[in-house]
Image (cartoon, rainbow, N blue to C red; front, top):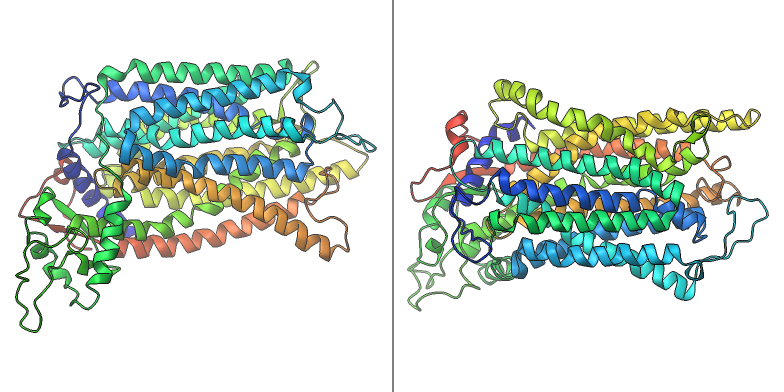
Length: 606
């Protein structure tokens, strides 16, 4: 990871150079005025929809298992899977949102359209929760002899329809919030990397504020006034977020869509396969290749990140030769499907190289899924009294890390980043890859804390039915919140900075796709663990097969996740070093640009 830190300034320089050459327009399609458009004055409206949308979706997602289990009467393990599949779908659909934004709609219109789709889902959920005829008859799922009617037919159809309207809307919205806000800072000039990094921290701060309000005020409203009122408040929060988005329309720098982002990727593979018998160019000739043809010079000449892996793809930007003589083809200009630009080739290489980094964050998000499902049920089996007449909603425990982070995120930006900048010479203090690594290591201790507390809770329950205070599970949420501050922001910044113009939203959506695979992996692990342990336990149901945590072995499941997490951390170290050693920068057409370059030490060697 020390190698990647030496390259951080180069990546920032290239991002600034690419940004300087982008064409941005205002809401009327006219070229932007850098004095009027963009900057934090525009990003603050995007931060508004970030906070209110997160407030709305978090209030639903983090307490959804209570509604699915208690009112729709799905068994506990199935309810947990419904929640994780829903959240996984939200994040998986971020790929669709990123694609539509970069290719056809632009980030603003994508957010506006799918924001209203999400709003309609919240309204439908509120209607179902309010009308008794759209839900199964009331029944206590915790009663030993209860035979509760599970939601089915039209009732289940309405529920899942509303739930997945929210999923589609939120999924397509999320990557564009981050990308559109970051686009307000993609200009050349000194300090650009610092401003962009500050924006990412500000976006995470607004995320924390939204989560905090959702997990305290909104979850309390759901618990006290009913889920119908809670869903209605989520709909109101979403409406306020959309109003914030629209209010900033006159200040935005908008990146016009550039057609299908998959076409250039397909061209690279087609050209490389077509020219598979060509001699692969050496690294030393990349600069010369970049200026061979007028087709290639259609890309603005700047620094190009060169990946020294997947060398066979370099053949896609080599002109066809006539044969043994080695002369240039006399057939005229080659088709774009046979001759690609170096920038197109390198972008495809970047996409391939970031896949292992992406994969290493999946286990991290599996732990997040556990905290949003079984840890909520864990809290329900504990003493929730804060005072004689006040009980803490179990879902509100997830607010604990965000209380801490609301203070820590500004401190990170104000104190940690400047201190580390002086030590490392990197504009952002530590590089995105280093930031991800810190979070992946720390999250292991969240599951260690969860396992220890659950073992103690089960022992207390077996010893005369004593209940531990619900605040015993606070440490697992605190540790996870701290690790998320490093991993989540580092991952978003890393993916955003890898993209060339026209792919920012799609690359950012890969961050959310990691959440999706993490939640899907959680569902797979729950089912797999139940199957394996039920066989080993002579049909006793498995670690997580009962609706009673006193009979389940959630502590062993947490130890399993802790083991997977530490193995995943060492796997990440390998791939982070592999990525760092794969990247170098070559100077094209003698142009050296980028504001952060002046602030950094020379990093000409890999």
